[in-house]
Image (cartoon, rainbow, N blue to C red; front, top):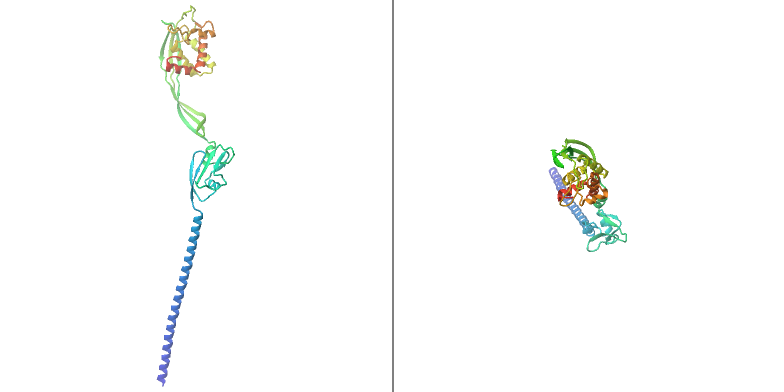
Length: 335
């Protein structure tokens, strides 16, 4: 009996253990099913959210479609832009187009963009509609002043010195005793530019690199009897000194006087009695006819002052300066 009782107890314990193990397996299976169900629900919810966001973005993209628009400015410049706006004013504002006067905008500023997708701006509007110009045009309208320091090499013209030597076998003999050559100096300037154009140039410093060499011309003269029988007085040195003074009276420079010296050396050798038998030209300036000089004095045939006064007035009226007259003589052979 005792053994039977022990066997029953053992059987009961085994049954309980087996039942407990079965229950644990059943509970574990249920938990796995529940977790799988929850995961499926989460995936479904996330899928729905993604589809909704994609749909909203699609709608927004449809409502804000980019459009290509052409803007024709009055300056001739063409702008091609992309925009989601439909109003003319908004499109111009997006592209930094500024409103000024005396311009016509087509379509009008307050209107919607037309089907041809073009905004045209023209000048000369009498209705005082607003004008639109680009930022580049506005910047170009401002006065821009730039200052630079520049160093240049400048030629120094040589001077011609005439030495009068009395005597000689002919009325006039010119001989170059020393050839002249230009000098050179290095000059530093402060230059101001306004919108690219030079408006002011100030010399800061200068340095002589090479001294100019004077040209020395020796002139031999003797008293000359004029065709009229009168006697010519004075010397080439006197004639040129008087001419130089008169040149300065006209406001001409020393360079102009040097040009005059060369011009009348070529024409007459500064001889008041010089007479061209072929043409009839006479005197230092070789007036043609000689009677033209009579307005400055009846002694025009022999008086160097009368001849020089007429000659300088002629040069002033016809060429403006002795330099211009000399340049013309070099090109044409006469003045």
